Image 1: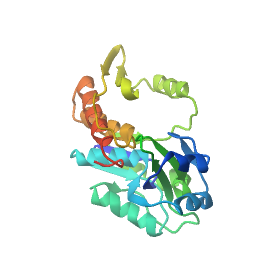
Image 2: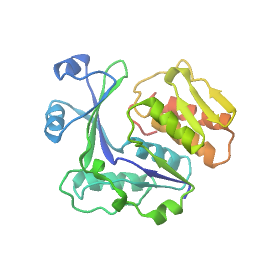
Image 3: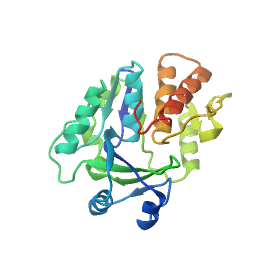
Image 4: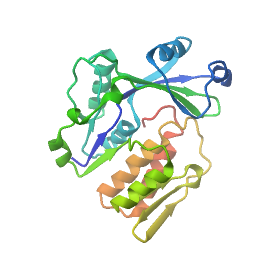
Length: 248
């Protein structure tokens, strides 16, 4: 296996809204808010669903890698309910092997409400559900040993500098995305930069970072240079923001 992802198994529910909806529900544009199950249902009750996708940041990246022809797997926790079953089926359809036993849990499968305003910005309301309960008991070490790269989404940090400090301690490759300013990769004393693509017909910024990771990791595991890997990441992130949703 080329890459194994470990992260929150979240079902993405995509809806188009106007700015008034955010104001009425006291939501801050372009942010992610954690909500409980009741608040989630209340928000969704007044909306029209555009599409439902097996999501979560790491899973989106893993699907992107699969679409590029890489052998990939994913570990995430879902409940043995309707959404949980659909989540697993969605990954299998994308040729992603799901390495986690699905069993009946006391908490429902995690869900993320993605609200897209006319300016293409997205505001997220996430009910983590059972996804946030993943632990070492859900992870098979043998599966990790069989993968070239293990891709993680949660370092349990709140400050960007903490992420940088972690990267320095591991003495590994550091890749930082900077939105419209492109991306940068740092490895030892070698620094490579890549500009963002210009004049794009942006429809939805959801998944830009996730698909950048797909493109970059695809280059990395297939022995492309840092510059070529950055360009591949930029290429995929540019494609995904010109459509609605986090899947190409």
